[in-house]
Amino acid sequence: MSQPDFKAMSQKELHAYVLAHRDNQEAFYRHNDLFNFWSFLKICHFLRTARL
View (cartoon, rainbow, N blue to C red):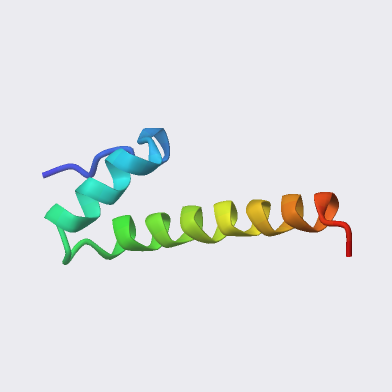
């Protein structure tokens, strides 16, 4: 069975796939990479706009 293209999936689609296929490490790592990326962007945006 071939793997789906995780890079072409949206974040929600990938999240649903990971929940349905908990044993798929490749999907889990891709999901984790996306989560870390979006978290980083949110932190950068906060730091640029915050009046510290």
